[in-house]
Amino acid sequence: MKFNISAASNVGRVRTNNEDMVLVNDIYVRDSECQATFDTDQHDRLLFALADGMGGHNAGEVASSDTLHNLQYFFGDLPIALHPEQVMDEMRKWLDSISLTIDSKSKSAPKFNGMGTTLVSIFLYDNQYYWMNCGDSRFLHLRNGRLQQISKDHSLDAITGRTEHSYILTNCIGGGCQDCYLDIHPCTTMIQPGDTLLLCSDGLYDMVTDLTVSKHLDQGDGANDLCHLACEAGGADNVSCCVIRIEQ
Image 1 (spheres, rainbow, N blue to C red):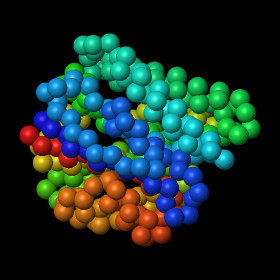
Image 2: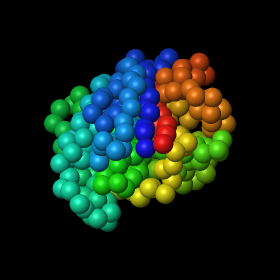
Image 3: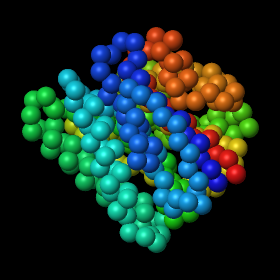
Image 4: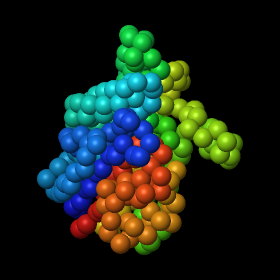
């Protein structure tokens, strides 16, 4: 299969710095956009991830960058021929490790105090696909015009079903979270030609409805188009997207 990727990360219209970052295999995207194509006949490993940082000053952008760089190196060093349960166990161990690293750095200097990040990712390893999530950045799946959220938000809003506690996370990497955890699942059966996969930060879904996102994905719009939609709607937060279109 062929993966056509578009990724973009935008500061929005209110914030002065961008704490989001997108990873497209080995390409880092912040305050920019990228296009890439990958053929699974030529790649036995692919990694797409998005991190939405948090913290004072520039701490959030440090947390998201450190997390994605660490993830890329860890993923590239995974031993070959691991079984799916072993792969998921390794990624959970990685989460524990990077969480300790981010927490330690947050205590090393006042400018890093309280820094943390979300993470959502899709990856290919040994002909099997997986998705994983920590926080409230989302993985959505579009097939035949139907957009479905696959990941579950780790937020107080998701627990209570209300919106008055918007932006309060119950799970993240760093950020003072003592017992972070990783939702990770195989998803090979949901990866089919004609599908479109979307990774996005809350800067998109807080500003643009799923119906609008679905409409624009259906008409072929890419990540930068979605970011512009969020900015036109007010751009209250940083906004980042990674759109993955799957072809035979």
